[in-house]
Amino acid sequence: MPEDFGADNPRGLYFIADLANTVQGDPEVGAPALQALLAHHGGPPFTLSGDDARQLRVAAARLIRILETDDEDRAAEAINGLLDEYPAQPCLVRLPGRPWSMHAKAPRGADPAHWLLATCALALGLWLGERGRCAWGRCAAPDCDHFFIDTGRRTPQRYCTPRCATRVRVAAYRGRRGIDETEPGSVY
Image 1: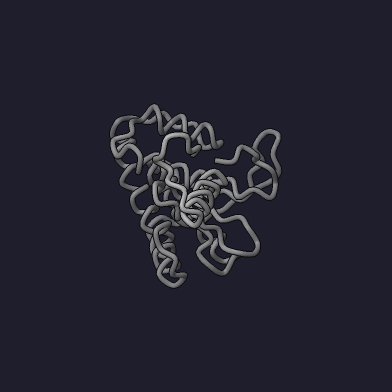
Image 2: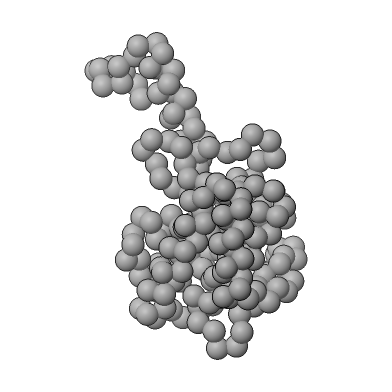
């Protein structure tokens, strides 16, 4: 995950990808880890219970289904469904040391899962509208299944990190050259 939370960085979307990767990596991830993830991304200071963690995992599964699609119409339908079910009340917020950004407020008394789905639906909807396509995806590297947010302006991104892209390129190069990566002395 990029650590540069600059003005042109879709910071809330990196949270969605990190959340999806965390829940996918550990389907029973607990409240402390989810609370730390929220804090790392500047989320609200929730004190999460075990039941909150369960609800957030269920909510994350709904977001994962959106991240898995590359069909704009299906993504828009799913995002609109979330916005109907969990209306986002957008407002501008300035976090310490950061520029103004759009956030969603959940109604008073709403649980963390409500906040999560309202916030993420707004963020994904704005990103889909700005990019005109599903500018997110799952890494194309054969040994990686992480989600990523595509921040490029030209060719759609295929890999979650430059490291995955390099591994795939090196393996393809070695395959073309007939280099067996399992041979002693081969460097991979």
